[in-house]
Amino acid sequence: VKYLDPGADKTRLGLAYSPGALNFVATHQGLVDYIEMPFEQLRHAPALADVQDNIPIVLHCASLSLAGFVPPSPETVDAGAEQVRRTRTPWLGEHLAFVSADALDEGAPPTALTYTVCPQLSQETVERATRNLKTVARHLQVPLILENPPLYFAVPGSTLNLVDYIVEVMARSDVGLLLDLTHLLIGALNTGGDALRDIERLPLERVVEVHISGLSTQSGVAWDDHAVPAPPAVFALLERVLERVRPQAVTLEYNWAPHFPHAIWRAHIDRVRAALEAT
Amino acid sequence: MTARRVHALLAAGLQKPALIAAWRANPELLAADGAKFNGRHSMACASSPGWAQRYATTACAKRYRTASG
Image 1 (cartoon, each protein chain N blue to C red):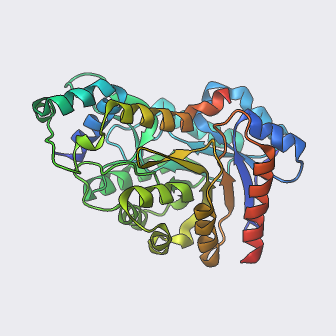
Image 2 (image 1 turned 45 degrees about the vertical axis):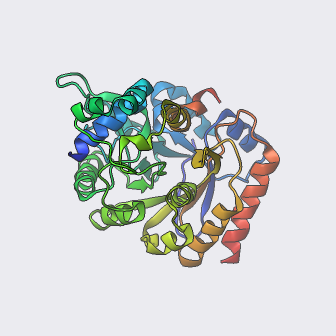
């Protein structure tokens, strides 16, 4: 069984899990250092952990609702902790977002979404997220790192912009940052911001892992899209980050297309490695 | 309105896009649920039921589509 030992000497390069990604790994030995695996998939299909016979796993999560007001069930937290132990992931990435909320009708069970949603960007949710982080981190044997969410619309009642929100939460906690460059770009595109300037305001010294994926535009809104390659603007952001810091890992998230072209995976792995070597 | 209530409204609208259509057609319904239309910072930002469906498709895919590849 293989485990990732990130170390400080080298940035590891991984792929988000998909059957296609495993096929790429099998046919391109030595190019990829790890597979980033969703906790939710391991929970429902534990046999997927067998991929560790060939390549280490870095665990990712979308169930902890860290920026929400309805906490995850104790069973979910325990299951996450169990997968952390089982995979020996060096850290657990989770979104600064929520996946469940109160029902509109009093007394009804909470609304449970199957995807993460950007929270209201306010001091109220900064404080809530900070408390949630402390609570969840106590159950984990590895560091929790926070992923910046994409922003598709102005969340009602928000008083902070997304970057300030992330900065505030990071300032009140000791977690690392999982910097999703595409999410950052999407937020800038959808709010008229400048992602290159936003980068400078983030606590880059706390970046542990970087995510890279594609985006698509529909009706004037930029959307996260893991079925298409990252645009040049995302690589420009990566280069800007690498001028300042050296993350422990960079993950290419091209996991939505059933047959993502191997040539693009290969080209983007080479592009990331070239950026790492150039800085 | 508290952030907790905003999250509840967002989650309800995303889970049931017809709610967004109803709120847009009849803002009093949204007010009754504890919110008001207020230009950009409103549930109207979710400009159509289709928006919620796109959101769900995109975000849901991030979490689960990998299971089926």
